[in-house]
Image (tube, rainbow, N blue to C red; front, side, top):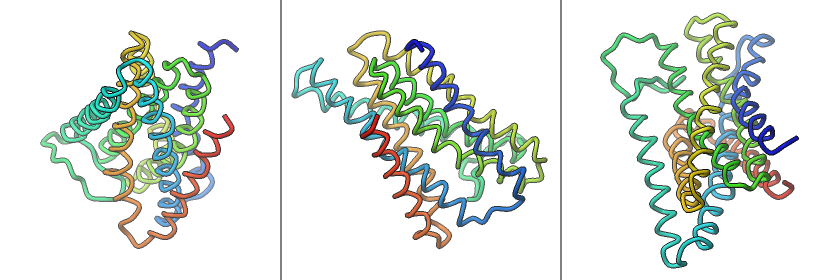
Length: 255
């Protein structure tokens, strides 16, 4: 399989993984908040390690090779901050609701909560797709494959959570599954942006890597962690986080 087909396959698999993760709704009607927090903790652990070992650390190494050593770190830091500011801007202005916690964005338009939940998970999936695209665009296929596998694994619990949330809002199983699947399809689009950003010039690679890392750190710290640690499931959620960290470290080590 050529590098092009590996890239396309990797981004598509990552995108449809939210739908794969939603499949259990057809076999079990209810899932406890505790089990969902474990799953989301697993996602957070994978994303946390991936942000550093697959994006931020490689950004620093690449910047040191391309630019003067003293300007490498400030450049990477600038990219990380820009990534954070970019995604927080969308977060503030795009109407959305979380599955469990109260809505934190006011919106004047009459939009159903089901639609708002789908918008929220789509917003969260954008940085993940961006990271996969940047990983493949860096020219290091092993890094791209590792990121694609990691994002695919962490998307599955997210898909189940969003499908469960839609069921609780009165959506049918078929609609919940379809919405979970569609929410992940923003990832191949975001991956395309990430891939093109790194393909323009090698000088843009460190910034693109750190930019993607900054967007992912926002999702972890402001979205996932507050959600999983707020209802007395801290110990179970932490087990999920540690499990995700171990899996991502193993993927990075063996791939």
